[in-house]
Amino acid sequence: MRCFKLCFMWTVLLFFGVTSTFALAGNTDPLFINLTSENSHRSLMAIGFGLAQQKRGHEVTIFLNDTGVKIASKQYSESYKKQQDLLRQIVADSGKVIVCPTCMNHYGVKEDDLITGLKKGNPDMTGAQLFKENTKTMAW
Image (cartoon, rainbow, N blue to C red; front, side):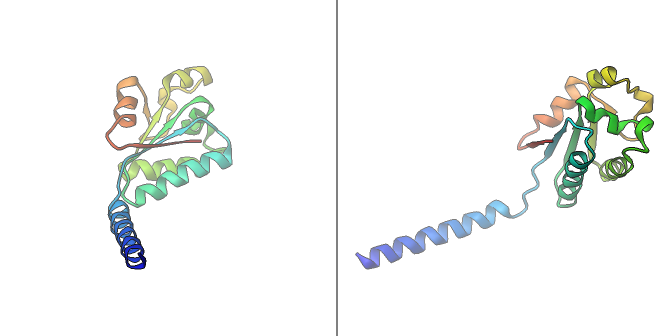
């Protein structure tokens, strides 16, 4: 009986040790971040996390909506300088930043006022990123 328990234990340990290594190795699933807030701390956490994951090989999309659209506007560049600098880095490294058009309209953000590289969204553009195979999502 003791031999059976030892064999079983080693089998389980070996199985989980091997499979967990494969599960972690090379994981580059796309990441879709939904940012609904203009709050300085929350927005820096979300955008900073996205940039960190992008540097780890994940394709990153940030969707700015509700009051988060203000972060995308040149009109608020003094208030959101750090956030806008991070968004520029994400876009420069092939990331995507999509801005909700309905929210832009609601908060008076014009398309011409978006910082360079950010895109006014539409259902096709946003859906293509959100529903891409193996995409993981986070929300702030």
